[in-house]
Length: 505
Image (cartoon, rainbow, N blue to C red; front, side):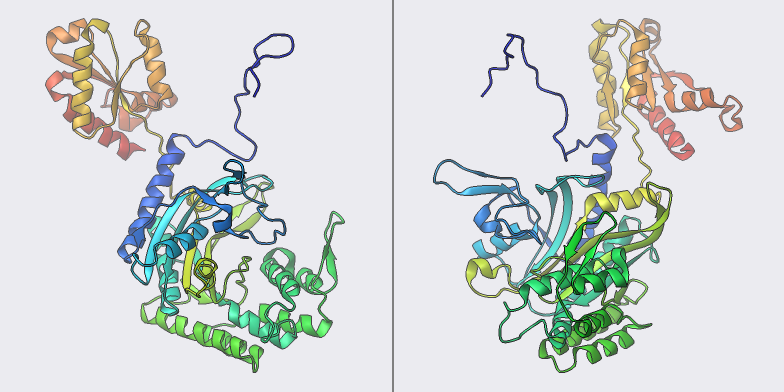
């Protein structure tokens, strides 16, 4: 380790910058995220799910080969060896892999089914890009220990409720549901799945899955190219395809266009596509059951619908899969209109816990991209970005600090966010500059004269700023930006002023 000195003897100071692919979260961002997560987890709690917090660090062995489309072991995670001949450890890449470990480790203590929700940061050692960070937040809900697709229907209903409770109105989102068994049935008909040898054509199926998952971005022709020999993009880079014949590709493409005007019609079309495939027919029946269960609870196609276009990239999904898509338009960085897109996804993964126990343990769950959903709420104007700071009690006489501390204690005891200025009080102008930088709504002032009279001055900083911007505001004519009040009325007057400012914003 370096002693911090350069070769010329000068002290080498570390660069004050965030590592590439990471970011810091300040004030309002943290507050907004917390409020949104509280609203979502209140929905999960109402559905009977319990909170779970797992370690940010897992053994690499427990995590397993987790990230999709990665061939090298441990690629995509931040891992290290805990001493010579010790276990390799890694930061969790999602919240599902730790749940699988918990379900196996505490299987004799947990209720079955086990219903849990969790939220927190996850880490992926991937190439960062615009809006793509190596640390981000997820919020999950999962049911472990039941094969009933009623659990999948419940997750979809709960996701719908969560989106609405945070401020995404009905009509601005849709939860799309599909089933990987149906797609497996279609691939069996296309000749790229052998029920007697699941490993056969595994590579081709992986390419097919990834191709279908990109249909919104590449379009039908782009997907058809990836199903065949491959595709060359605009930059000239070539992506090898699945090598399907034209006839095989058309069977798969029929799956991507199977959506009809109603769920019933879509299911009927899927039944045609899977033909005599047993696994395909099972998937169609599961979709039919999910649709009926959701309909019985009042979740119609305006909220949740059957959509064969949903595939989900992860290979461990074994049955129903779902995705929450926001349907309203935003402007991209080039000013073009586009739909906001997906903010959550999940599905059934009946083999994940099996890695630990050797026995298949059915499970299903959903993960919400917290940062994506927050961005959507900002785009809809559902989060105001209110960064109102604390009431600041200024210090006119440092020998009377106890009096100022008494004021701030009264305000805090009444539930008002407040602080005493603790910098150098010599320059009063600097105190007001501090209050402005803190976006404080009110400054409390008491000099010697006010102390003798038993009064304080309240300076409405929000009103003052508005008057400075537009001195002709009629609604502010009869309300001065600064008032002198009895010290005994401090709490009541501050509450009144804060209420008025809140209505004005």
